[in-house]
Image (cartoon, rainbow, N blue to C red; front, side, top):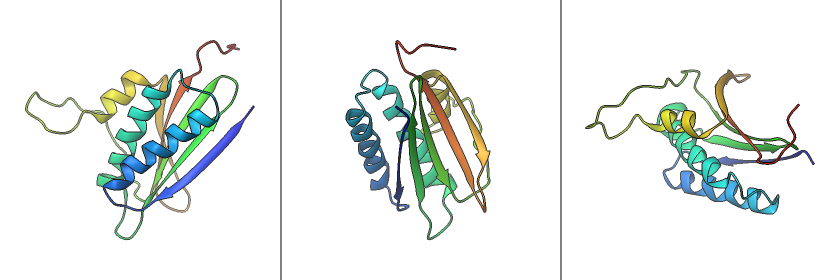
Amino acid sequence: MPKTTRQFFDARPESVGRARSFVSEALDDWGLPDRAEDVLLCVSELATNALVHGTAPGRGFLVKLDVDEEVVRLEVHDSRRRRPEVRQATGTDTSGRGLILVTALADGWGVEDRTPIGKIVWSCFKIPGAATA
């Protein structure tokens, strides 16, 4: 059952919605509706972070989705090495809550270096009813 799909997006605001649609269609095609809302909110947050903080001029970002029998793994690849950090936004801040949401919704997340340049921010989601080792 392992499946993978990926798509590159230009560094434009409308690409966040396109990334969300891309992931939604893949999850539908693979028959994985159970965690779709969590995955879709996380792709929105991670793609927005890539767009705002992670893309060098003239570069975009890549969204990759992998699934096996137990886990959906979402990756957002961008062109800058600066690692995102969870921060505590104040009540008046208009941004800064994305990674708090990812932490709350995903079963795990992290950051890896990307070769030759950039990083991968990933999150994973256990599939309900999947056998665990």
